[in-house]
Amino acid sequence: MQQHLDLCPHYSFIIVDESVWFLDIVAIALKKTYHSVTHDTYKGRLDTVLRHLTIKKVAQAMPPHSLLASRGTGGQGLSMQFAKVVFRCGPWWKKAWEEQATGRVHRPGPQKPTFIYELRA
Image 1 (tube, rainbow, N blue to C red):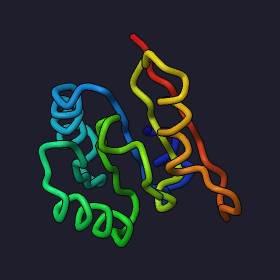
Image 2: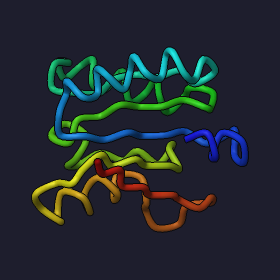
Image 3: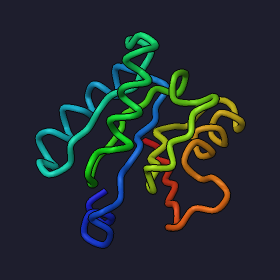
Image 4: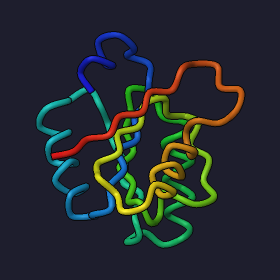
């Protein structure tokens, strides 16, 4: 993340994982490590209205901004072209899930390049 902040400070990030508990840990780490990066969370704990408002807020936020999204809620039917960097925390059990998460950001005709990273431990 630091490399992109240094090279492209006007890019937003999406961090996607299957575990909402892991995303809670990532949120704490972001607050302590990257003070200039604000973040929002998009996961199943939010009701439908809050999910919509969260996406709208993140899309209008000044970069650098990050969205922490769970795989289940951040997958199907969403367009998240406001972000240019995706961190998939994995591995995931189905290749289609990985492609779906990437597809939320990487759409035909983007103006800037999209960067996709897969983090494995």
